[in-house]
Amino acid sequence: MNETRKAQSAKSRARSAWRMAHDEERITHGAWQDLPAARRPQRSALNAVVVPDEDEDVLIDDDIGIRIDAPWKVVLYNDNIHTFDEVILQLQKATGCSAQRAEKIAFEAHHRGKAVAYSGEFNECFGVMGVLREIQLVVEIEG
Image 1 (tube, rainbow, N blue to C red):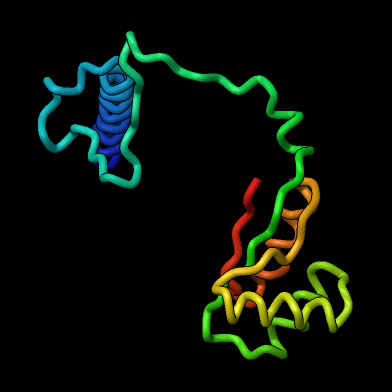
Image 2: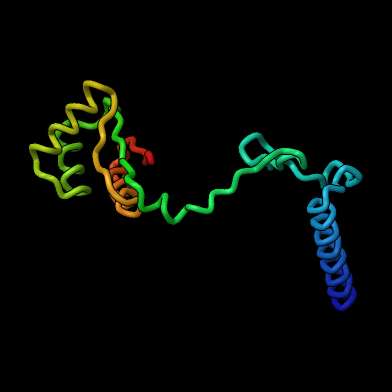
């Protein structure tokens, strides 16, 4: 009886694997409409696939290497959660600037709503952004 269960289980797994591969092929080629509702792909607004129409022009940026080296900025936004001391210390840690410079950036973000915390190459800005986000400061990179 145990041998029979093992054989049925192996057949079931094989059938399931075949069905999944077959369904995946149908989904890839756009023929998912004829799948049973339980096996159709579920898509939310967050992971929707956008495919341009055949007659739609698509711009491809071949100059990505040049754009990465272009001047980028890390923008710090005011959040009314962190103290000035926390922000100043984290700015010093992230950018290596003086306490006076970090204080100026923090006050500008507080009064204007945002301030440029750092500018440089993309990889440098990405590192600075990571350090600032360690304490959940609200930052983004603009280029």
